[in-house]
Amino acid sequence: MSTVRRTAVALAALSALALTACGPTGDDTAGGTGTPSAGTPTAGSSPSGSAAPSKSATPTAKPAKPTTSAGSAGSKAPTDPDFDVFPCSTHDVTFTASLAEPTTSSYLLKITNKGTKACRVLGHPVVTFGALDGQATERGTAPGIEDAIRLAPGKSAYAGLMGGAVDGTGKTVDSIAMTMNTESDLVQTPLKASTPGLYVSSTKNSVTPWVDNAEDALSL
Image (cartoon, rainbow, N blue to C red; front, side, top):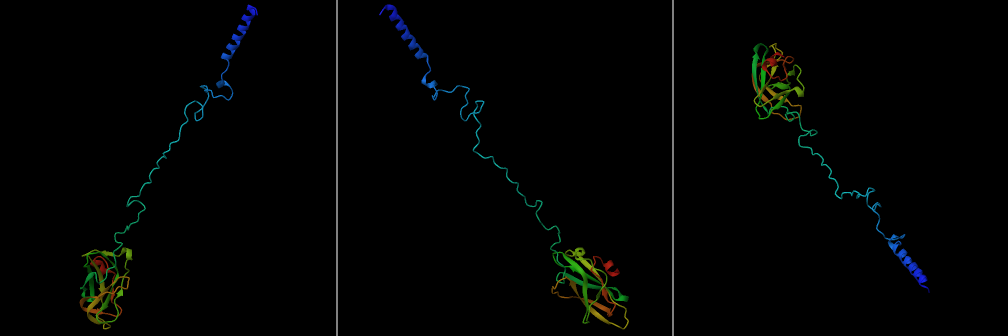
């Protein structure tokens, strides 16, 4: 082989080696595991390349419900200070009768609360005349239970007992007995008072409702 031909073959071999060294590597072929470029998004990242926000594992605490304090609106309690004040009976009071008008045998009846608690004075007194049958008729209108007198300890209430002129149709008695209207079947012990010269007529004897002053008791 001539020198020129050997030189040409050597150059051709060198060129082939150069092309092999500069060609693509196995990492750049399809299906390879080459490193992704900077602009390619990875799993779990946002499109802008920043990490996606994660959800907190701790739940947000719910606000506590407000509690209702004692005595707040909606609680029920008695509003009437006298809700436990019961009707007066003869067990609660003392009783007197004093002559107010001799010509008509009229007497002022008086009760006084002897206890330590208030009571309500209801209606008319129930008055009987010694050993005689019957009782005094009611004169005037008594207030309802809501407007009845509240008799505090040591306080008094009054009623007027009207006798009658001596006309020969009745009898004279020296005492009366009184019980209270309690609007119940409470058993009471009658309270007695001396009434010398009280003339009891079959049609004219009457008694007023209890009032809070003596003047009204004698004028009704």
